[in-house]
Amino acid sequence: SSGINAEYGGQSEDNIEKLFLDLFGDLGLQQMICQPTHQAGRILDLLLSTRDSIVNEISVASQHTVCHSDHFAINFRIDSKVERVIHKRKTLNFKKANWEGLNKALNSVKW
Image (cartoon, rainbow, N blue to C red; front, side):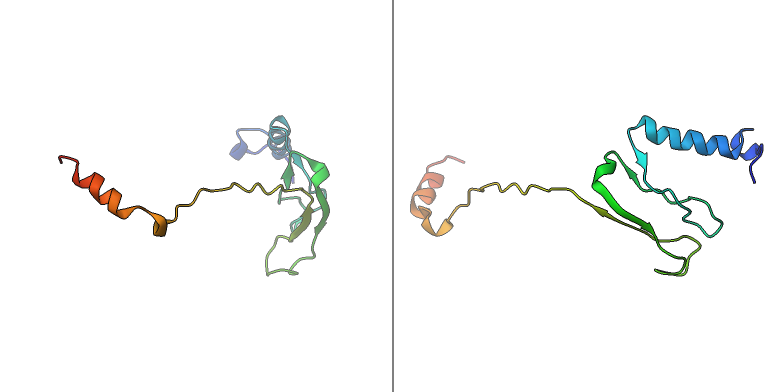
């Protein structure tokens, strides 16, 4: 039940929830869950995204589908193209090193 609650600085729980969700909006995030995720009938679990077009097939599972909990599991698919960038790395072949020249150069240094 909603009402004034000293625990929330004298503000109603509904107002605190609104401020909490508004904060996500201020950060460019959108809450993607629109149905209850808790056995008490409330939305307690969040799925936040800055691009709602990439989050698809959102579903909330029945209670105890995944594990024994008072929360329901959330399933979703993220559609995003990931480009793999291959960096060519220079590797040294120590078998082809001029060890004799290296030893000679190191020996010529007055340590």
